[in-house]
Amino acid sequence: MQPDSLLPLLLPHPKSTTDTSKPDTGSDHFYSSSQMKTFPKSSFFKEKRAPTLPTPADIRAINQKSDNVLATNFNRPQPLRIPSLGLFVKYGADVTIVEAQTQIMVREKLQGRVPVPEVFGWAEDGGQRFIYMSLIEGETLQERWRDMNDHERWTICKELRYMVEAWRSLKQDTHDYYIGSQGKQPLNDIFLAHRPELTGPFQGVKAVKQFQDACGIEISTDVPIIFTHSDLVAPNILLSLGPNLKVAAIIDWGQAGWYPAYWEYCKAKRVRLNPEHFSDALQEEWRTKYLPLIMDPVHDETYYHPWLYFVLSKGI
Image (spheres, rainbow, N blue to C red):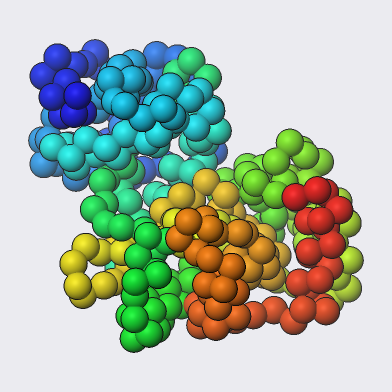
């Protein structure tokens, strides 16, 4: 059964908590299982696509009618697409409200420079978080890369470099340095998962040293704190449909935050892409030829090798 076919049975819904101000990018969370935060000034409500967003119960019900085996996964179920509402819902126990707040911040500060799905609202229910956002039609770079010609690859990498430079230009308050996620929340990087002593937040002028000491990353040079996507890999880059390729959106901001400057490149270089789309040869070409077009490489001996030692020592 298609998601849209169930909507008449599910809408309208009970009232939700709304916020008529600009979207909040702070650290407030909703822990009540019955609350939803929505943004009436978002395009979903301005265009009157529906009286309310589907409730968490609705989302689960629709997804369970699909044939996807991941639909009932508690931690990371298959996200739900509702094309008739222009709606994409990412949810699960592993999803954080900070991810939604980060998307809002990036979209507000870098409008026109970095395409990011618009957040319509979020909810927390039964140990799962739900992020309601705009549905971006496209295919991932992972799906398209193998069939792209050299010119298309170069053009996309040039676009991506402009975007990476944009978010790396974001600044912290000079009197409020920290290593952590948006709003001074702990980092959510998968390489730090289940190690709360490594996720911070680490605050103050010695934040980088405190973080590196906790991780056992032996880097002696001064390293600035830079806003980092921290999961900039081919599956998280959406390309437009059709022959004239361009970047349609950067998605999955769940691991983003303020990290040492070298983290973005090291992480992107280390992550193994799906071998179904990226053979070993294609993966190596991506790392050596194209990744340096997207972001400046870091010096191996000074930064990458100490970082890699940390990763390997943690069994990552």
